[in-house]
Length: 269
Ligand SMILES: [Ca+2]
Image (cartoon, rainbow, N blue to C red):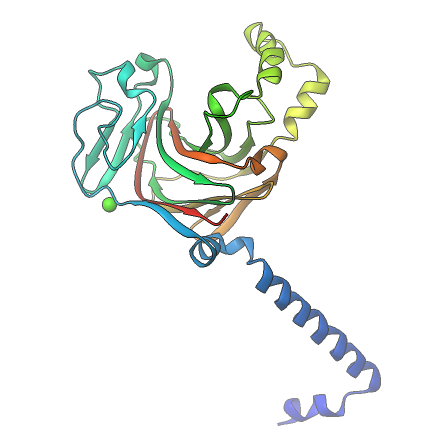
């Protein structure tokens, strides 16, 4: 009982401290109420957003071509190599095996999205079929000028790290791309100002890839992109391109092999 009774006998100073702390806690609660914690982006999507697409892949694909996955999916690269199956629906899972060399591009599989703020929830697994498996996913708008192939912004999950990238005002901005390309072609370092600018467009956090299934949540809210894995926020970055008003497509860019299931796309705004 002592510990319970004691606070009632607190000194004037303790009481002022108690009032101050209570006030801060109350203010914090109000802030959380207004803007849900970014650690709960799946909750944010489910509570504030409208589900605009869901696919559990419980069917068989129809051949190898661009629309073979069905349910509105399209591939920007399948028709380049019609003899090779890059997307296999097997046991209710989308198994992607890119013919990157033959197609001259990572497998690019996309679906209509259509939001300003919102995002995607995806289950994924690196099956361990090729060395250095990685997964890039993000948003594209081919109806906007001045961006190469409409590439807006992506997250990339590589064996040693996760990177969030604003490509709209970064490497896929046509003026920046035109200036950067000759240096890439000559394998020369970029000019210091360009290098410094591009460094502001992305962030990389360390991460160790494995071959387990994970739930990934990728969202944009205003000029911020956030990525959560298995309910934990692991990366966030702010950059002007993330605020692009129309994330028209949700895209996977896969250089080798990855398995995907339960894709949900949510629109908050
Ligand atoms: Ca499934």
